[in-house]
Image (tube, rainbow over the protein chains, first blue to last red):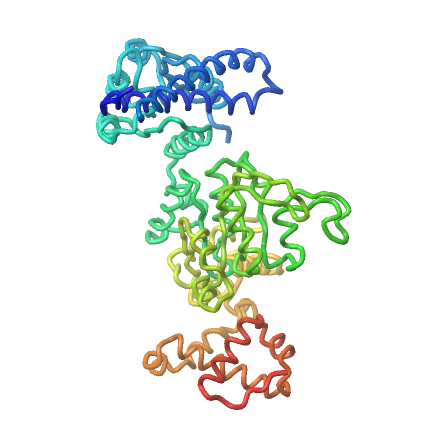
Length: 67
Length: 448
């Protein structure tokens, strides 16, 4: 893949940061609540897994764009 | 006083982010969610919010900016959340009225800082300081404004000032601002022996040393999430300073005898009545440790420089107890003209002693013996100020200390330990002075 133009790269950076943020907040919450609030954790974990897959795709896209 | 729950508007289109942030914020607030900018603006028109967390990219790129603009007119404290790294976007968000811009990814710590900042902005800090420190000294206020900044970030605070000026009091006040429900761990470093201080600070494992019959948590670990107040920090030894520096920088440390790291996120407040810069110069204090302690510095003036506050302080301590006493004008005058070398602590003690005496009306003569015979002022009066000016204060003081050490050494037949004990000098200080004497070509100082 060719190098991305600066706007697309900026958007991709934004998306990766946003995904990381969602994952970080979710994992912090799981860390704090897994004993006291298992229902919340049950709700969050599937979404976290999906988000992790999305991150993998975004990172791959970014890496390809840099080659 | 328990804070009332805040009303927060959370505008975020990503389900996982919204769910996590909502769960986090619900500990402090009633949270209303919105997914689009239109929904957010509509909610802000029908409900009252104290605070809003707004993602910038919603149904369209930068649609969150419309929300920021709308919330400004409602006077709602707005926190923007975004993964955008472009300065132009950050500038636009601020110019439209956002109060804080949190860069994604952020942690729960950043959210707590923003919430803390918002809550504290609702308090009139100057008024509270006036009540707490009983001061009307404007220069002290402007200095104490530093604290306002310090509590928003995670920067350490270094409080300097003579003994009795209220350093511990101020540290407790900072703790109150940070959150009184969080731990406040106070250690007077000078009160713990050199051999025990490491275990006191970092904790130890069972069997780490003779007498360690069971594992013990250290103060750093106990201060997690709160304030660690190190009083008389100048008395810490160099090896402990080194270990503490690492723990402060990395937020992790090893308890004595343990191979397992402990993580602790504490706010460091330290205090000293000594000049740390001077100690660095003398090789008694690590320079890198001093830089680490010096996030925000507050110097508390001695009472003799706060004469305008004396009246307030005297009245405060007089009214503090149910057994009321009164001071005659002459007694008050004597108190106002006294130097108060022990500062506020001494003033409080004097008033307590007066209250516990039989008299209800305190006269000037009742103060005799209580006000420290103005020894210090006599000493100061005997100083040759012209000589100090011509030599420079440091050289003058060096000359005086050299003279005293030489004389006491002579009296003690050159016995070093006795001289150090008589003069309450540390090893380093003693040998520094002796080196000075030798450099000056002073008398034949032979130490044994």
